[in-house]
Structures are given as structure tokens and as C-alpha cells.
Image (cartoon, rainbow, N blue to C red; front, side, top):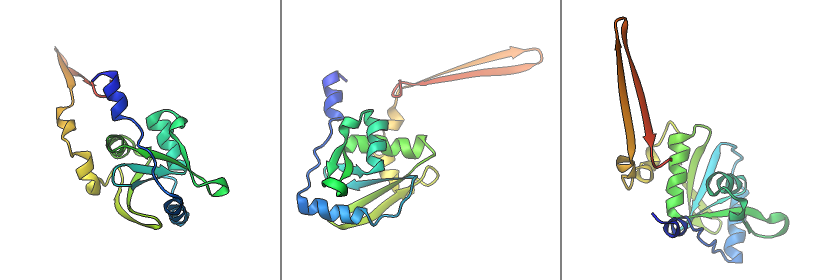
Length: 169
């Protein structure tokens, strides 16, 4: 894939909320219980968003910059926010649920101040995210090179194994 295609694929969607929607969301967000492990994402139909500490975590971890952060609301009611494309959402879900063990993932659907938890997953409980994790079968087609080296000796056998996942570079 050329550089322009990569940029386009990972381009940040624009956070499109009017003042009333933003205020409704902010009032809902404040009612959520504090959970240090939970990464809460909000499905906005065309894209996803994360807010507060989760937004900062995603910006630093996946976008590797805090310039991805936007402010939702103003003044003391303001909330750090980041918008997430569908492709990036899949990347984040795979990383949190298949690679890391220190986070859980929650997905909310709704609008204004009416949101509901529709999916929740942990590294040991992937069930509700199966459709996201394995949707495009990319994992079956990922380029992996494996080498196996048996070493036979008089007193036994040792086997060397190595692999390279080219998608992770």
C-alpha cells in the first residue's frame, strides 16, 4: 500500500456534534462509573469516539500523537475526545482483546444523552466482539513466515522455532 493510501485509511473522521447533542452526551458520560481498565467507545454510525482518559490513551497509543485530541464542550465541562475510523476501531479492538491483558473494551450505541452498553469484552471473554475481531478474515491471510530447525544429537533432540508476522513489522 502506498503512503497516500495509508494516510487515507487512518484519517481521523470529523467529530460532528451540535451543541445540544454534545451537552446531552456530556451529561450521560458523567454518569458512567469510574473504571480504570475499561476503554469505552461510542458508535456514531459512520465512526466511533472515545472520551476523557480513554481519548488520551487512544491518541497516545494508536495515533501516537495528542494532536488527534479534540475538545467536546467548553470550559470546566470540556472533555477530551478523539474520533476513530472503522478500520482503527478494528485495530484497537484486536489489540485490546487479543494482544493486551490490562484493558477491557466496552461499546455503546445511542445519541444525545441516551446511550446503552451493547458489547463488552475482556481478553478472556471475546464473545460479543467476534464479528469485529474476525470479520474480514484478515487474520487468516496475514503474511507470517515460520522456520523450524530440528537439531538431533546423541543425547536428545532440540527444536528451534521462529516466526515473523509481517503485519506487525
